Length: 567
Image (cartoon, rainbow, N blue to C red; front, top):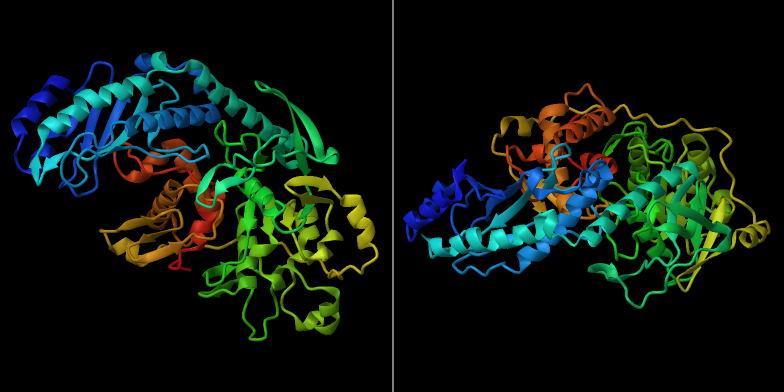
């Protein structure tokens, strides 16, 4: 490690030289209160920015040990510091001038969800802090602008480091509120298990969002208020007494007119698998962390999936116990999505009628009489929904606006009226008795088999120059093979998609061997991430921006959408 004075001397020596002279700056420098690690220097001012880490000893950062002594507190603390750092960094972005990306200073930008990220890491033993920055080293044309970089390294970085990463300079009350909130959110998740609930939505929650492109709460929204029948009370460790709607396990139907808030409630439940920041309006909207949103996904590929629970006896004789297609229909894709969600050990399905295949969801009584069961290869979801709960322990929350047949199947029915939920279970069940129920197959189906073993893609074994490219939140590519994640709707951040790209590549090159099934591979991957941390995927000694932890369910869905799976 070199003193910071040597970095200043190097900058003076390379001023106005060709841009490659910046490479000489790589190394670790002591700035007394922190260390500055320049571990990657961009090739020219128009290339991807340079990677610089700020490393602070735990004894100097001085964050209380109890703020990172559990996994949920640690992630909450890292998230809080990263948001604070990002806010402070923004003040200095492009304040140093030059060509191309000169003067850019950035770090990861967080959304409303609290996610574990590589951009800021706190060591769980020592309390040491590592913050990752991307910096555009300034240039005039392709000549070094050392004085401008000196401003960044010796003026800007010390200022925002002191403001954002040292406990002594923190708003201690705001930080404690963040840690306390994480405790309360964890407590609610534990209560869901104890009380046999699938989700909790607090009274006063703000569920609608500003717009389709903003996840901030809608200011004019009607606050959520639980129906009396579903209202429960919890005594949180820090917030104290809180009341709200507890949704029991089983089959829950959400009905109501258009634009009355059915899908808004379901969307909040979808993202309730993550904790949310204070002020989001959904801080206390907590859903079973394994919950999966199911939908139709026309055109997706399916590899060796046992969809016989829903589709059988195809007229072309095609095997549905190990089904394959490169272009799935709506019903077939939703059947595969359901089975793959079961494979990921979900215990809650979230379904919106609007994004489902009609023939997968329902066959009414008239259709059952006209087209006999032995003439129809699809067993619709309505005929399996009770079996999935009773035999597999998987609850369902279903939004329906036009299909009354689900009233017969539901344990509880909630009507949304002007964004306010009402319990109509008793009334709806009484009316449903006046209508015939659909017939259910007498024969009990077999639980699907999940013994799918894949070999690695041979092209990835031969090609040493593998190129990963992430295209927003919706997709990534390995070399030229695109993995489409548009309909994996519980992905919350582009950096989760980036992590999935690295996870898939690692599994292909290190874990898949044709012997281990997909459940074993994913579990092995999760064990590695737990031991080594998310940063090990970046193939270097130093942490970088760019990755956020996905759930186990999204890892499964990512693998299943890679069209080059070999079997």
